[in-house]
Length: 342
Image (cartoon, rainbow, N blue to C red; front, side, top):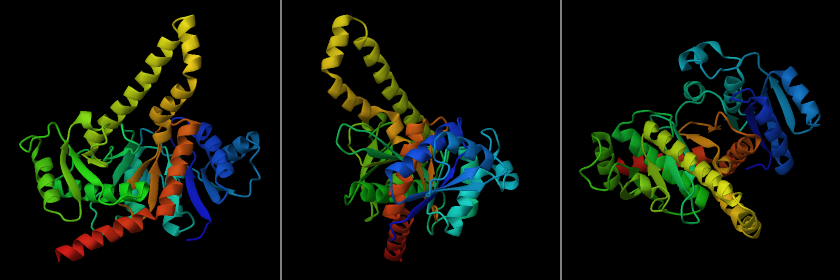
């Protein structure tokens, strides 16, 4: 594929809008020399901010004016019907038209799901899209967790499809084969869990296309037992937010303890290289950017309260997904399953 890479950014979405997305965009084109960004949003506001950042005339930054913004409290149906010139919708339209190879937004998740499903459509064999992201583990490799909130409730077929997509993502990202896939459950025993999980387990056990290793409990997430952990969106969102909360708690407690006395401050100075490495490992910002997989295009969802650093991580994730051509890899996997079953 061409070295040139174009990504559309919803500049207006999220809690901070241009305050975090624009500095991240400018940083991204500095770091990635083959990246072009199309900034979707209020042109006047974008130009004003770019001027402050001394990037108004950057050759790899384009502006696509949008007259509307999807608000955090907009209902998905309302946004889909009435916000056709919003920065979120326009960024998706750019992917559909081929002007951009991916889009990134920190906006309203429900509205994004409705718009992405309508504009980009699903891949063959996929019922619903899923949000997937990584969580650090005790091993060098992270675990891929999905769904993270796109689908509150899922039947067994949808969970099976999530497992297929998750395995493709993990294998492509980590350069591995036969990614270990697990279902998140309230216990490791086969009798535990609700009917959808039990039925999904049977589907996965009977499939030759998935390396299913059984159930995982919440305390297995960080162990590296599995490469992919599958669950419904309600459970996954709670699990992810809990993981992020734990990471922030560790950093808070450690910082407080090391500033408690002069000796502790001296100890912190000695341990600085180790602490810096630990912070980098657990800092949630670097894991920002959940992919909305299952669509015929690449969509990356950033946290609504993403900082500049976190939004930059989401842009970098979109770049990686374009380079891996994830939708095509997922499409091929489902075609392989369908052809084998037939």
